[in-house]
Length: 124
Image 1 (cartoon, helix red, strand yellow):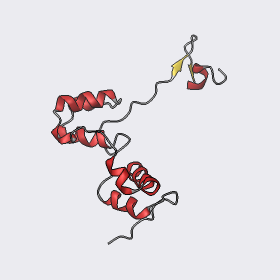
Image 2: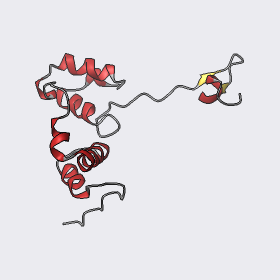
Image 3: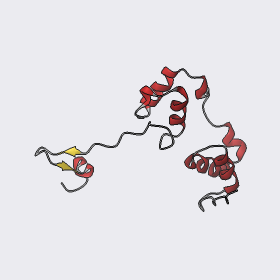
């Protein structure tokens, strides 16, 4: 068995983080839950959340609508299990569903310019 990697040092409850990671939670989700549990108590964190049913109970049409709402791409051809994976891990590990890359803005002269100059925050 390979040695376990250490949890990041900013975690308040590294053992809970590792337990969540072993259960398949993303790094971000595991860190958020473990730190909230350290701050508010595990029982309080467990009571939070909505009343929405598990993704497995949703229809494919509902899953595709949710993927569209959060800005994922490639969801129209995915199977139900792939959609669920993409929704649970939108920043990676979700099949082809990824957040679309920002498109560079183009100046009136037709040359690309940075996002910052397009918003007036930088030079351009």
